[in-house]
Every structure is written in C-alpha cells, then in structure tokens.
Length: 274
Image 1 (cartoon, rainbow, N blue to C red):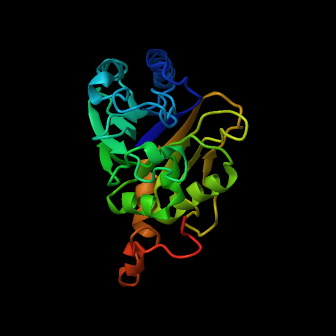
Image 2: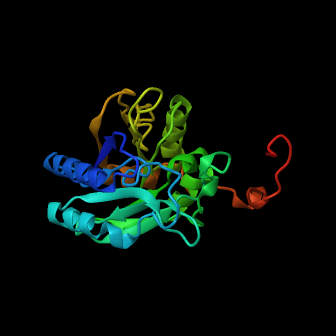
C-alpha cells in the first residue's frame, strides 16, 4: 500500500476565504488526477495567517461544509488549515478530512508562538492521531515541530505519517530537524510551506534511513526551491515503512522512560527565562 501525499507550496490571501477555498478545490482536483490520496496545505490557508482576526471572524466546522462536500465528490483527503473559533480566542487549526468528506480530526496547534503575534491565540492541549484509509496520521503545526516531544507523542499514539502545515522562513535548520523527526520516530514526514523569499522548501522525508544491509540511504523525498509554486508529491510505501518499524531500533523500542521525569518539570531557569 502506498499513501501518496500532495503538498501545496503556495501563499493564500488574508481574509479571502471564498477565493482561498476555490484555490484548494482547484489543487485538490489536480492532485486527484495525479493519484494523490490526500492534499496537505500550508498553515492557516483558508483564512490566511492573519492574526488580527478575532474569535467572531474565525471559522467553525460548519463553515467547512461546502468544502467537505467537494472533498467527498472528488474522493481525495484534505488537511484543511485555518484560524478557527476557540473558547475565547481563535485557534490555529488543522482539520483532517477523509475521502468521504467527513472530518476525521480537528487539531489545534499546541506550541503557539507566544513570543510573537500568536500570543493572542488559544493553544491546543493535546496531540492527536486519526485513521486515514488504514494509515495512522498525526498533525503538528509549524512551531510544534521545533519540539521533539510533539513528534514523539504522535509516534507513541501510533502515528505512521506526520503531516506538517507550516508558514515560516529560515528553513535550513528546520528541514534538518524534520528529517531527524522522521528518523528517530520511524514516521514518514511531509511539510507544506508557502513559497517566497526565505520561505518555501516544503519537504517530505521517509523514515527509512538504511537498507537491510545497514547501508545508509537518502531519506529525502523532495525539497523544492523557495520560490517554486504548486504541488509536490511524496509516495510513502506503508508496507515497507511498517516492515522497517518492525525490525529497527528507533521509535518506542528501547526507550529508558524512568530517566525522563525531568521532561515534565515546568520550571524555567536561566538562560531560558523570557
């Protein structure tokens, strides 16, 4: 079984919800023709990454009904991203929509950028995994991927593929980190980032980093240029990934969890006090 993930590298337009949805449908149709199973969008694609939106202007699941219908008609999954309505403030959200048009999972970004404009958002409180056509998919959004715990928890919850809506620049160290997340958790990883100067570089990585003979293999599936716009495709051979996970020693095989208690210590000390 191969899961083909289409990744859109493109910048949407702030507040132009209807036009952004039309763009999504256009690229869903193209991705479906290319045999993709699911389309991954950059961060906050429907609303635009516009942090002046208040809770009353953020979207709800009901606002996605027409888009869900289009997903069902085309028969291709979608990771739809937007600023959505929270309890008191908007949340940075990804909705995983199945090929039948039903919402399988709503994930709100846990690691909001509280050092910057995202301090006005309401963070999520848990990492989530859902079943998409027999494949366990987890989501982490942009700044989530800076913390190895995000991907680790998704792996522990059963994720086989981690999809990453993103919107930021200075991508080189972040690409290296995502390759490492794939390696250490034995999960496939794909990331969608808007194109532009010091941006772009959407990527996909296989978790398979060496063959059965122990010879290293390049786990990079694609990394387009910063300015390139359009769809890029990652084919994850789920059977090979599962076989690799069954025999290799990363992931949750030999962890020494009794030594990890400090990870739950919430005390912040110099030089990390802000």
